[in-house]
Length: 429
Image 1 (cartoon, helix red, strand yellow):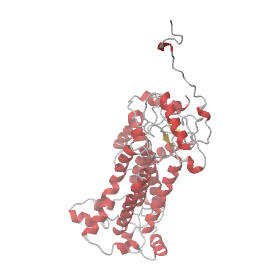
Image 2: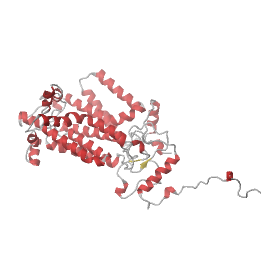
Image 3: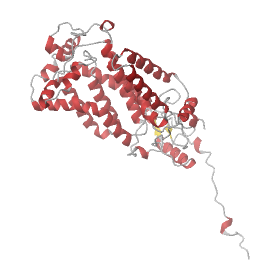
């Protein structure tokens, strides 16, 4: 007798429709909805990592991405950077036109090739800052405002009742010289690269490009302030008192001259003597850089916040001990870094996820402030993936506190900003 239920091969797998998922009530906690959304998308697409890097070397891919890009007012930053870079290159007398043309050509090529663009596009603000800073040395003195010699000492006395820099530098010895030299003359210059490398491995994908842009724009703003509001540093007061200053005066290594003498080298003396911005005391970009690095690293590694705070205080002390900055300069640089960081954090910075250790562990990404802290959730199931290529990250079309998950291997090639984020064209699918 034939089995009335048929053979085992007659059974078929039953698929339960999940069209009800996008309309899940919001009574579910935000984190549960977020995890469910990630799991659903991971089953709808091939296994793709947000952490993957672009490897294409075809300029045609760049052109396709540019055609698909949604232009906005946010993209005006590239126009401003271009104008500032052209001004700087035109005013720089040395090196000559051949060298400047060669460097500019190489930079343009790096922006055309997708594999290099993902690194050099976020680097543009830093490159513009460095070029602009060097160009300041070639700006004619009759284009510049008068130098303020008495302002910073007066503010120092008003706020603190004394010149803290002179107090800290009154007692000197070789041990203190080395302890001040390490953060100010060594660590300061390597810290941005080291922090970037660490965040590239351990932070959410897209954190390093945001850090690079924040760091570059903070320094650009700082140099502009130094150029428009030139102030004399503590070493000038120690050498010339409060006598009027002029742009023909050379800079001074101040306390770093003792380091040159200690090691028998000529490193800091010629560097600071020929500084493009001799009277760029306010704001202190040494302090601003330390605060910026500490804020980003504390954001990624909140448990190590005390360590980064100690480093910041260490550098603050070093700048005053070496007679390079007043305390008010440190406050100005730190406030500038804080404003840039918190604006960035609110709109552009990818959020860290406590259960993820490496960038390769992330299967979705969230940008901006946590919606649970704002009283509403933007990571609704009904929303599609938010667009965010390397040009529009932070623009009105891509600022989002929702989650971004990989859905396709064929993502846009114009996306160096986030090192494998999702494109405008992908968001339309």
